Figure 1 (cartoon, one colour):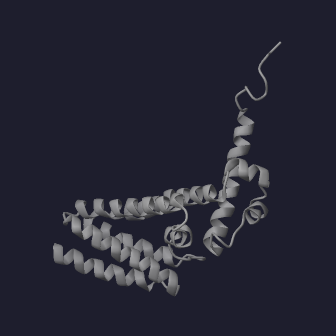
Figure 2: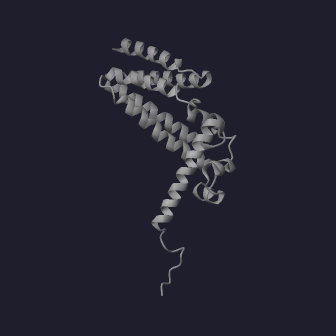
Figure 3: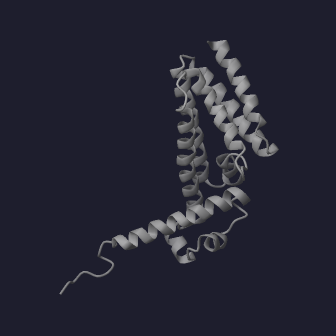
Length: 200
């Protein structure tokens, strides 16, 4: 007779799949609600209703709301940076690849439901009280800064230009989020072109 208990047995593939599906459903709902309405305005009951994942399962997957916020920001970061890189990779000229970042920002700013930068928004809401969320926001910005630095280096420009372009892009994100306009991307792109030409 098998002496192992159900607790000792490894999870069955079907259970793993169910957990993975529930996790994705919860994250889809969290992304839609947190980004659209704000993190503090959304409770776990809202996530349960939108995702159709039970509260018990939600808390099994995410022991606290902060963990769900962190996972939402992490998943969004991966997608956001992949989309940016995919757009930039359509260009071959090193200088045009730099400017393509601002072209992509302009496209992003015009998407339905755009509400600014998710990481800036999350930091503004929770950064003072949640080191987990603050760290996630800092990690996203550090990765974006490093990506720009790589583009600037490939274009044969000095490293300081990468920091300047980063600030231009960040300013465009904040302004676009407040104004609800894509124009800041075009303005930042024009400034970026001037900086590239000055350092060329």
